[in-house]
Length: 525
Image (cartoon, rainbow, N blue to C red; front, side, top):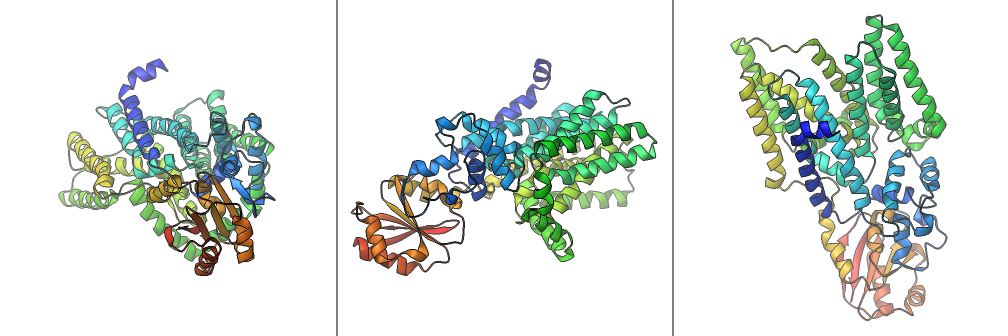
């Protein structure tokens, strides 16, 4: 380890810089997405939904009632049963939640988003290292190979996709690491004349951990397996094929022993059924790709593709016009590239089709690989026209442009929720005001749970049951002289509700503060 740190000091400096950038971005995150709230609840709570509690409706609750869903209480430390039970009843495997639970144990009843973002920051340090290791394999034989690999690895780790992945508290960051580790181990397998038991074991463990982190990992693994299956058949290396197949079978058996519910999740659950139905819909296949191509360009390249595509086309045309000889890659590098681009294309297409929403997080596990493939491919094209030094300089200029672009055009990472700063600050300023949430059956309360961990006291009522008399009973012992917060679920008729609260409280002025994910927020004075 010391030898690696000494030899790769520039890489370590880059990881420190990216960590600082992640921490700055994380400090601007003031809100939770619905699924992020689930991350904490499923790793901690004794049931999947807070709304399942018998006392959820028609009771005044202190903020600790909601914080309890997002954090571990002192008497709950060391109890990991919710991790397994909740994932059994949900649609995801348990490893990410287990690691998040370890992180949450450090803070106890105090909720902080840094337990999740801190876990992702550490994960991304390893992602950068494995991107670097893969790039070194591709750039082997080049001048300043280590420095080039470091620069591209660092650039890939500070694209908006990487920052989004770090600040979004879900399993996608860990899934990206699993894929990169698996690819690197398969590159080692490709290079090995005689495969050691240690490598077979590492491949098996990586496959096991990958599947138990996110099922989409299988989209990548299946293509890797097929590549080696064909390779071993062609080269008549039947013994290696047997070892490889047995390794994967053992990993699958262990996976089923640890978490047998994955079969139900993948094939019988609502997510699995949705995936299978989408795969049979040609129209869905076609329209699913375009939003994620946009996401890839915007977040994965910081809009850099608008420069890369014309540059690549121009280089190809110029080479053909000038009849310049094509720079050929050696066989080993071609094989490594095959391990990268074939599974990545398959993952991108299938994940785009299978995902219930066409958003970044479902393709983000392969964004780093796509980045290095595109940059490396452009670099090879440029070398057909320019010298190695000039080609490297052009790539560095493009990478610098991609880093500057978000600042120049005010591009933000996905789901950082910087737009929620004002409502969070207003709630903090007046957190002592009582709050009533008129909730219907649409939307999910967890979408906006974070505000209720700030308010001193709040009451949730089913909007269909409210009457003036009931509101009178709810507020009869509350001091509303300084005002009251009113949360109203979307798709509700707001004016009658607001008028009822005005009649009961005598507060005449109502101000709309914010439209949130599942409700609208008013303050009445």
